[in-house]
Length: 240
Image 1 (spheres, rainbow, N blue to C red):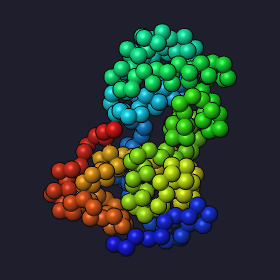
Image 2 (image 1 turned 45 degrees about the vertical axis):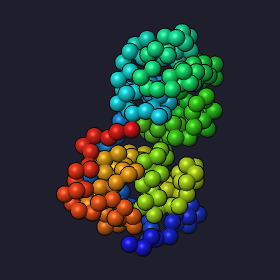
Image 3 (image 1 turned 30 degrees about the horizontal axis):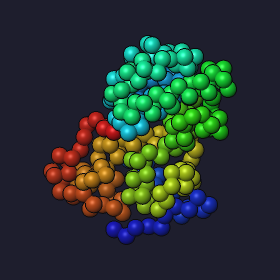
């Protein structure tokens, strides 16, 4: 299948917009329950678990969450945490010393700048230690219902496979894909692509023969196209 012209943030191709939105609609039907797979009860918890999710699985982060927030339920408590105890609580998530440093600085900044509350603006969130646009958009979209595009590894891989953009820089990807969809769709689009990337469109050996959007995908054939072989690659739960 010939690869179509990638998205231009200034003036995306009409055919590309239609194809991209068709894929989104089919993914919405395929994953009606798509949502953030990190457990959280409020904006502070979501901010913390998103920071912890780097280089590990959501499952591991969710496992440490209850004890972590029982000990440190808010920014004020976490800002005053004993480093050794915090390290012990989050150790299963990996890179726990660096993550502990990030959480301490992050919590302290929330207390000093925002009275312990998580700000609801992208420009404020990205000033916090350890918080980039990806983390900020996760928090905005899922804690504050502010539309945002979360460009993680799955999202970036899929939009390039779909031929929606050739960009590799996350900020450029965010802007290119944002031009293809109404702003109101951004958060759920992110969830659907991440779910699809975790369950079918794997980095290695994508389940092309069991893919609901195969007919619109210019990368069809990168993985097995035989339905039986492809079906064995489908995961019922996401990993990563």
